[in-house]
Length: 266
Image (cartoon, rainbow, N blue to C red; front, top):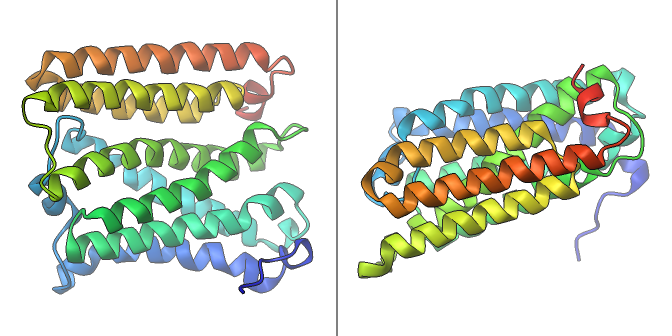
């Protein structure tokens, strides 16, 4: 049975190196098709595009997400952060999330958006939601460095993976020939609203995380620009999901009586 890292091991050299190694790996893996290994993720996604697949421009956010991951990985590896309690809590889940992104890209480029790809992205999401919960319920205010180098990038990544998981599951169903027929539009719309509800719950419980809300709204706008232009019910569902996200973010911020989210971003 595998032994999990203990609290005393969280600040070890190996523990601090893991997020950095896997952050770099998740950036390098998607370039493998240019070396003749597998097919580009965009091509694999286009082959099983659904009504809730975001418009192509939305995926440009990966540039910011990769940069944020590297910033976090470098920040937590600094000797001065060896005994940082927040980083000790989120270091291993972050390493797991970065590794999950790398494995997902490797598998998807090689085999497409099958059920295995969905399972990988869901495990990755679990790692990120664990981080998001820790951040959202942290009992003290973050330092400015923690806000910019840990809270912002990891909250944004958690939000994008929430959307990506829903999109991946829909694409996986199509990959395996389960498309819903005449009910496909209705199913896609329901899934989108449910996704907005999940994000809303996360936002209320995290006291209205602005990075999470903004990234989710970015994804919804891209879904509206793609599937929403092809099917009116999807456009309505994207709007309803956006209302849920905005409302939950405002509700969460009102519960944040100490003003921690707003103060943490300054």
